[in-house]
Image (tube, rainbow, N blue to C red; front, top):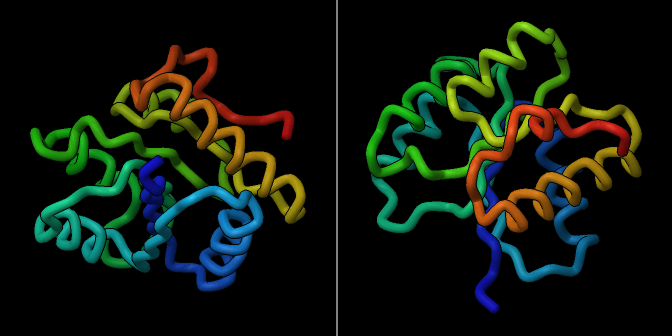
Length: 146
């Protein structure tokens, strides 16, 4: 089986480190890439010959935030089918609904505990693969109860 290529766009170094630890603990074959701001993400996608399988996207990043990135990704013919999972500390139901309408696949509010983070990421990856990388119904959009 080919490795699952996961890209995390997040400017918080600690979040990137914890995320990497979670992926390593799963014991799955995965390639993990991190990018620290939105402009860098879009430039990286533009230049890449191969695209990741899944993008985890923080909303609050410097230079270009996650909202702008999501809009650019979903409006670009080459990138629009990429599953984008929002990974943010904030939670506003109106914003969450808008993100779904803009094409995000899932929304995870970053949990405080490592065990909850691990469960949330595992659930997001499992559900994304089960949905064959297609956007699920809005009822399944927010990943909680980890």
